[in-house]
Length: 257
Image (tube, rainbow, N blue to C red; front, side):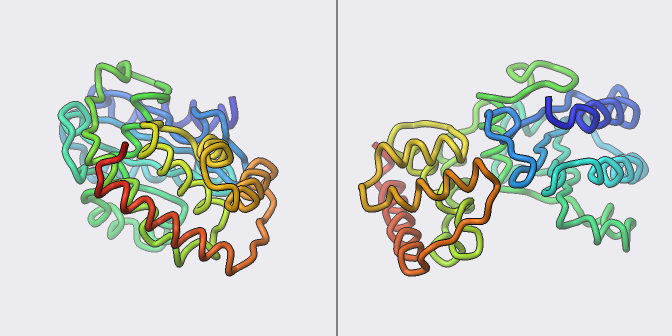
């Protein structure tokens, strides 16, 4: 397994810090969907607890996370700590007790007390993460997925993935690989009810989208697998982004097929 020491370290630290309050530690994202790339991917985790956790526990946990993040892939670790009650009886947008990604590391390093006190709220992305866990998730420690995670309503999942791509028409030039493949996998869900990875989304797009799109999708797939930067024709990429966002919006309004 990729980064086994990081994953084992995370599971062991959660057990030590949260003790009997820990329900489980769950791996999701590209690592469990067969498309992990050390340059393009991060380590995606959900830590589930029952009951409240203290600021002291949060501080100890974040010190471990920051240390393990140094051993992680280029994009680092992304995780949320969530109460079991919101996993079992899903709430949207989903409350979380603590969140971390590489982009927040400087904040934690410079003002840890402020980070601990303020990094709590709700996150629409958790609907998509829980949906992936239900289908692909791996238990690093604790209770089985089916014992912890209830069903995510289709409308919540749709709103979650829409939030991730609604600005794609403008964002595609900044991160073409991610945006192109993500648009494809959202279309695959609306068309065929598929919950799939970005790589699988690109493969779906090659088979199902209009032939004029296939060169762009093929290039995105190749760069995703190789880890290379993607060079795009700006006009073509912008057109693809606008047309796909418009198509997805119409499909959502129609309720999918």
